[in-house]
Length: 297
Ligand code: NAD
Ligand code: MG
Image (cartoon, rainbow, N blue to C red; front, side):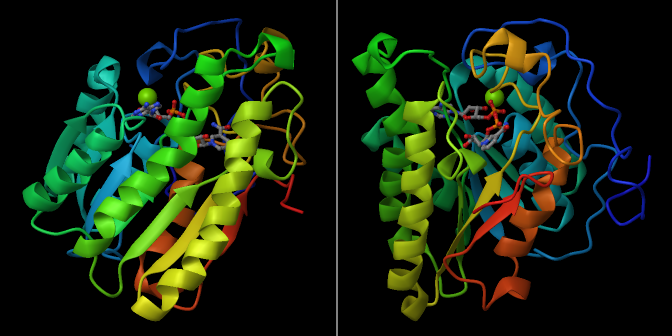
């Protein structure tokens, strides 16, 4: 298969997904997705853009986080991977890929909706990697609900804790460890700007993340730490079949984009590589859309 530098038609770069009806419990597993997603296993070629760097990535077992872990390793970074315990099998596959790239990998399962765990996560990553200079806040929770009166308080608070509170806790814990030149990359969504009526809790956390990114970036820029975010459009990951979408939207997932297809996790990784590397030294407080043409406002 061609790597990410080979010129090709983006419309046909990946076949249009033929998505059968499927449902997984939350959190979903990559290993149970039909069809399987591309995390760059065969397609991502590194060129030392992150040589010697040390990265913590949340939600690194599957989907976008897994693609970022593979890309970072192939660019020469050591990687600490966080995910939920239920995702150990997916995490093992991605950890193997990091090792195969010749990099150190540390796996730290645990629930980031808990403040104490967030502190432990950062401390363990820092200790085991012998430093920390890239934080990728990528973990997220998305449960669709047609009617606000049916969203439970548990769902509302849990989505907020995982998606935005955890970013606050992780960054607060990490800052004393981060050297000048470090990069923090948050994951927001096109949903921050174009919320679906079925995702009001999720979409509003993503709007909060975009705003948090803009403000925090201005606060930390003078200290030599850059903060940016990536806003994916529809990407084929286990988030979607595990109650992320109503079934009729799931089977047509991503077809509405100008490209006519959903993105693959591997197509998101280069934006995270760019924001982590020194190449983006003057890029501060930015949200980079990777949407297949649906664009940010
Ligand atoms: P994914 O399911 O592969 O990844 C999400 C990960 O979040 C899971 O693997 C899990 O490890 C982690 N997670 C969830 N709750 C957690 C918790 N309490 N503690 C620790 N980890 C937890 O799906 P993905 O689509 O790759 O999601 C990655 C990010 O991309 C999310 O922030 C998501 O909101 C965002 N995003 C995805 C899409 C899309 O279409 N897939 C679009 C826009 C934004
Ligand atoms: Mg997962």
